[in-house]
Length: 256
Image 1 (cartoon, one colour):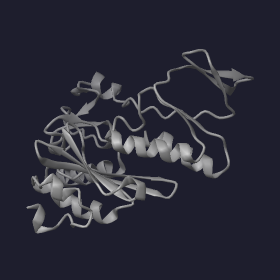
Image 2 (image 1 turned 90 degrees about the vertical axis):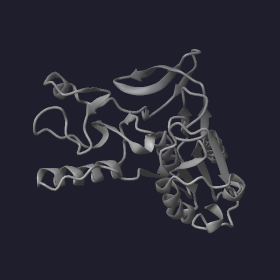
Image 3 (image 1 turned 120 degrees about the vertical axis):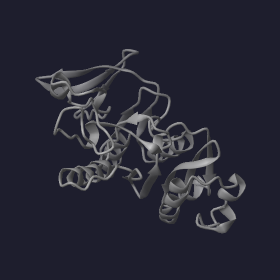
Image 4 (image 1 turned 30 degrees about the vertical axis):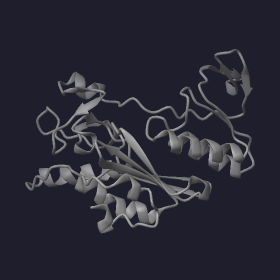
């Protein structure tokens, strides 16, 4: 995911030999489409990162109470002076669930981030909420944007000015000289339009579901990121052939 790749990029720039071990068949599999995964795999490998895909970790070896290596499922041991484990999180909501709050993979909240417990709200990574940007599915968003915007919703509810949470999700990642900006959620997409040429290291992926734009991943393409928000919120169904042309602004009437 983002944490592992960002850590790899920083360490490589410090002259450290890095191996990335990924259990799935591509990096960023949980958050991005395959074209973006392959792009970042190639970028990291070009800088000397040993990217191991479809590889299981059995355990972390130690000597004297310190990590000395990582044992893989095939028996190979990767020598290591430092191991960074970036495999996601399990929300720490057991006390709330034991107290009677609804949930499971997080604590369930309503549109104002209120749990089923009187006067108890939840925001951020642990808040399981129905998202219009995920076709109504109950999700947790692990992002600064989500935590900040949900906190604002709670403050308004507490002070008597309730307002439903409906912020457009956005994310970012910096790796080397690459700036990835994402708007919307690609969950449930059924097609991807590649806008521009990845070989130029400035391009965007546009995710569609039933013809409607639901998200964009923009690499060194800030204009697409800014303009693409309107496509995500409007639910427009642009012509894919025009959409893939980077010379056509995403605000153009040609996309109506």
